[in-house]
Image (cartoon, rainbow, N blue to C red; front, side, top):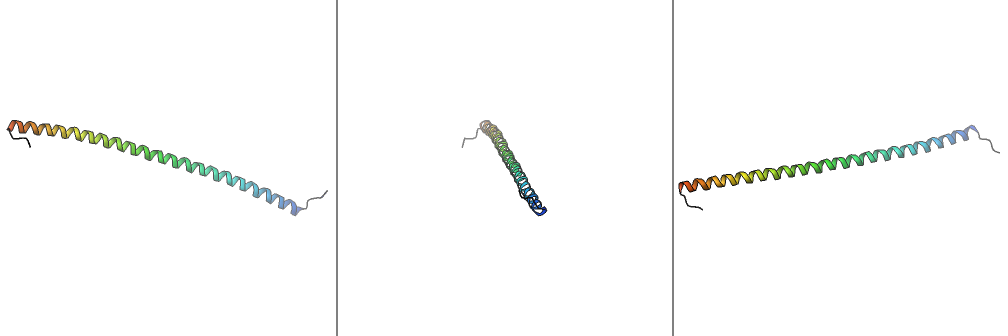
Length: 88
């Protein structure tokens, strides 16, 4: 049976330490990549909801403008009728 010399134990300890730090580094790298992926998905969802809200706001604005222009057009027609002006 072979006995281990102090240099063999130091080399074995270095190997174990290097292996553990490599594995730990891989776990930390994976955790950070998952955090970044989650953050990117969340940011994309926020941007998508923001665009949907902007689209709803524009639709509401255009509907309101259309309603107001219809009212103005009707009022102009009433004015022309009361002044007995010809329709264009």
